[in-house]
Image 1 (tube, helix red, strand yellow):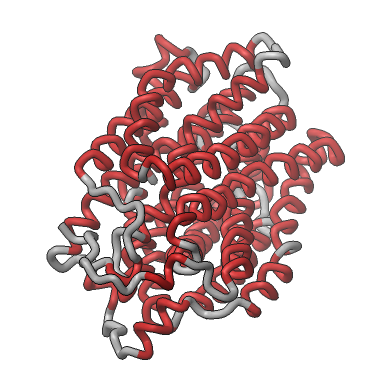
Image 2: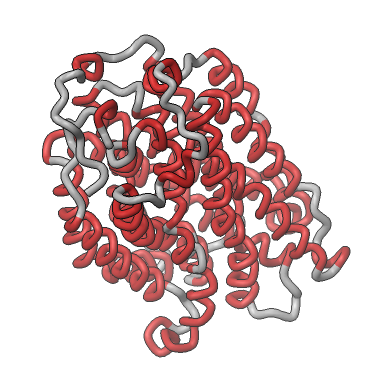
Length: 450
């Protein structure tokens, strides 16, 4: 199967931290952090945006799912961005590509704040929102296509899992910040002010850290592994196409199933949390706050489980994660629901801890595991498109949720806690099965992956 290393002993360089490692890993952490912050402002503000972009005649749940479905196009365009920018990252370098992607998605996020409301221009507000999210999704898809391999190629071999967890945690730290920012804006502007103008300033705030991230990325060195293949004239003409050739295509298909499951896992949290909490009676501001706390626990879980994989292996870490999650999926979301329903502020911290942990812990393995499956010549294309390919199925999750409202109503009423548990349960089955049929990759040389 593609992805196994050769038996060459030319791996000593990977047992040390290369020059510029700290700067490069920090740069990718910040980039992925901003990626998530810009992306997840929408899910943090769903109870607010449903009143901004959806028809006022809709019920709250229908409006929530309508805006969530419109937002889903961001996810569905990410594979396009991964294909485009992953291919460029394998041809022109990781660093140059990352300068383009971070600028693109930050500017597009700010432009969301300029969209007229439904009250002003009717359905065109939702259409413009969809178009802007499509463009933003392309840039976001390119961010991790170039960035994750970049960070892994700077990591010491024995600590790749830890670096993977740190880099991946950037996403959930961004989720947390988006929730805290929305909470702060909600407190400052009040409910009515948030519906009128506060949501706009929340989107514009995505520009603030852009300058810092750009400076860091400008100062970063290029990946040493990319420089090697460039000097050896091993850059492929169209790296993206090579991931569909045998035997690499078998690696891609296994990664595809893995990522379908992982995205169902993460989006059970991202798509449902504020809906569960707000639907159970918490204000939009409170829902955003507890969503942020869940993001903090999610970030910690990714770092911890990435680090653990440096000892027990990537495959075993995925399998343990899947087994535990199968048991706790439905109880976790029911506990979250009743904690909010009874406004029990002693239960809520523990409830969001469980949600953040069990939906995101295995994500700490993703940058390292995918980077260890694809050769340097096509690593950005393989990691980026392999990562995003799961969205071809799970990116439709908001539409699946809309369809399942009726069948699940006898169990969950007008709250979507059972639906979230269902997708988390399904996720564990999928990524657990994919990890089981895949190889162990801990300790391999990135230079020798074929």
